[in-house]
Image 1 (cartoon, helix red, strand yellow):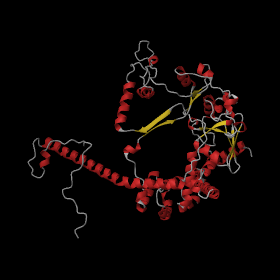
Image 2 (image 1 turned 30 degrees about the horizontal axis):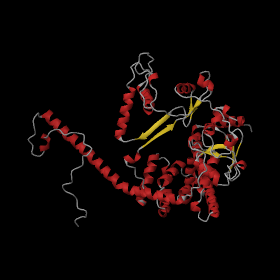
Image 3 (image 1 turned 45 degrees about the horizontal axis):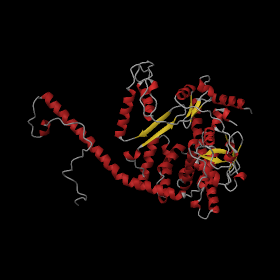
Image 4 (image 1 turned 90 degrees about the vertical axis):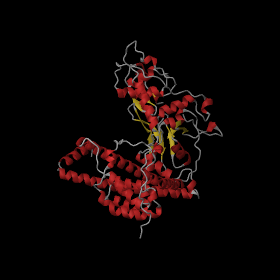
Length: 535
């Protein structure tokens, strides 16, 4: 049956269903989806078991294999499902956790009695529980999980955390201290913009905010940008150690744009067609690592940048026989590929290795792979190791840059250069280096990580409890002060003079401040309770 006819028949069948039947069909599809997810994870777990057995046969100490069974499985799952390495690794870990630690919960997912969202929460929140206690926890959660269908995500998290805390307190997640949560990330949004997100110390935040306000306020009142837009542009000016240029257009403006040359030189690689740069075309450009930008943004960047023609460099016979590519060749390969060339991987080319598809022969370079663009591609360190040390993966690079991958099971995957997709004229840093055979024991690393987290939870729990008690005492003190101040106001309104009652002498005291200093601590209890009961 042709696709068009099938699509028409599908729409007709759905249109004939009543709302009640549609709701039932939706609920049934969710149940089937849960069953399909369970089946996929079971297949992944079986593949992991087989790859792990292969590793044990290849090396008597599989804990120190260069490419472990987990890494082999992750690479195959990433290629088969078109996932990034991180997403594939999470999926393999979840599959392993269901089979090894939560078999009863997995059984419920397999028959559709729970949904994948709930199971994901159970997997993540029970990660640090001791293996010896998991069977009891698994049985308890499986017995109750069918009652959670109408629960919110937060309620499921709280219930699982409570069960974990009862059976293994050190496995309960404790929030990090504020100073441990500091970070600053720049996240590409894919539309020519990026999001700056982070947590900094209060004094750093105050200084940052003050500096942005100072730069954004230095332009004249005729600047057409909003306050938010000026603060955003001020961030770029701050990074380049210059003042924010005014866009009012007045010739006599003291802050006009042509006086804003950056004090430091910053290199940002932007790819665009010559017509776009010259203003005769409207094709988009590309900022390395941050995605596509429109033609107007390209021309704005080109006004203040050094422009060079990007073309496939010529390689001399002597350069082709050297292992290290020239700077021009490396730049071309990174701009052509844009990302790691392994199936499903989206790591930026700027952090990737430059790999020889046909391996370079160090003993006799004339008989090995040449260091030329059509034999070079970008691979992230993880997939570079997989390709080099896992003999099951084979790759072939075509003259146009396409890489044909063959998996250990014989599946064929093709990846094309990202630059060629955006700029067809391109069709035809980390230096090129061999990946070192790093031997790792994933099981021992995971056990050590869990031990560290459990220890941190144990240390952090009394700190958090003390902090909660202090906050509760501060809240109570502020509430009591407000109540006392309110009664003092009422006394003044109703009587206009001090009270003579011997039972409430504090009401004649001065008004108390309703904000507490940061170093305030509750007074000691004048009547502390004994540790042991008096009987």
